[in-house]
Length: 131
Image 1 (cartoon, rainbow, N blue to C red):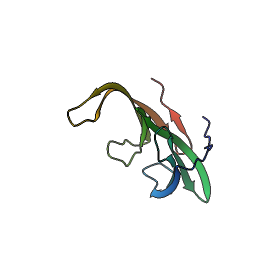
Image 2: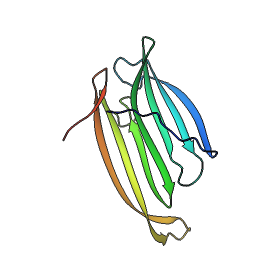
Image 3: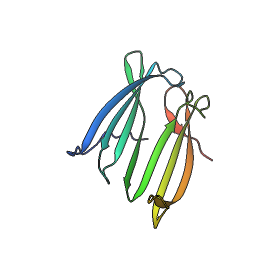
Image 4: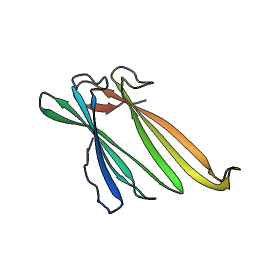
């Protein structure tokens, strides 16, 4: 799979990085998460994940979330995370479509669509599990 690290930096963007233990990924000593995100509506936030092993950098996966009325969010669940499984990385995807209605507190009512994809980690690469 392709791992693009391409992002058009705009003035309302921010950059942050976090380093974690390997989160249960076999042969990964540390996991680097780079967040490049928009801090305004319609500007996506992208999270890039890289693994470290013996001074080698291994691209793991990248996800994005964006909201502007409707929204799209993605989240990775690694083996050591709550709900994780050995050698599996889950990709949780949620899309919300604004129905035009509001709850009593004024927040919008969304029609939600959720899906979960499974990826298998073999110690070297992440590959989508076929159904």
